[in-house]
Image (cartoon, rainbow, N blue to C red; front, side, top):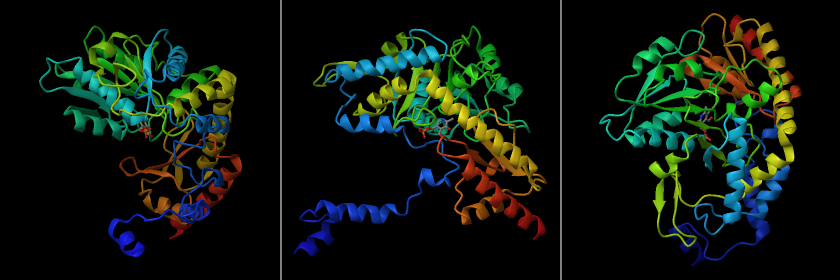
Length: 402
Ligand SMILES: Cc1ncc(COP(=O)(O)O)c(C=O)c1O
């Protein structure tokens, strides 16, 4: 009887004991890769800070989808947003933590459309290097995404970008830390294109948001990318990338507090009372928010600077070593902790990627740009990179001979 039921509905009739369940889970999870073994070189996520994990476990049931029930948690979220807003160059900004960069970018695209009800066929201009989440948002919102091509150095062609702006443009996008190479779009120049025009300007710093402010303290020469550019209306910056937050923790920040009133969704039925929010999701974790508040307090500015400093030291080490290998080269000089690698003679990078995968190195591959890239996250240590370089050298030599 038990077996028949198991077959017909896929669920056990009677539960198993905990030990057996944990054994079954571990058996399956053996397939997973582990940040700490150093082979995950192409992820923008990493192990969260241990203290954040401890805090998170205490507050799993907090639901910020109903903030009236959890006003204390909601206050912590406000404090995070306010402190990060100042880090991004502005006082009194509003915003919210999200499920990630994709949701934050979707929220921004929706606002751009909502603020322009008179545009019948709304368009948004973005560089070709913009993250796939903008394609998703454009599809969901029925917005035409117009993509400005890239130059040979992978930076956006500003002449083309400007040409794409027209009377149907409701929003423009700049990226501060591209997914492929960690490059920073010329945010000030894009701002100039829309000066005095009623066009919503969103900067996607999902990755760069927790790198660039700290690089500034480390005296790197970083061009302006945040709210200090007056035309920038909103920013995506994700704690669950370089902020060492728990998955899922993204972030959406917006300069004008009236935008929530103008464009937010009104939720009338909640136990905690009526409120307006930007979110695509309803129920959403408070635990990750509380954990990130704890992470910010624990690390402080110095702690974040230190994390970025170490990642950059490893980035420079990797970039130096890649430049010494025959047959391959850096796709671009790293601006942050992202290292792109391409072939010297323009051959496809796919073969190298394939060979690296056989040796268990997991990088990101961007076929359209013919590059593979390493994201030098906090879990990537110098000794991992040294092993990686040895394999890369061997593979490059082998492929040149064959
Ligand atoms: C620049 C950029 N924006 C947005 C995203 C999407 O973030 P998420 O995966 O958290 O939705 C990514 C993901 O890597 C990204 O690199």
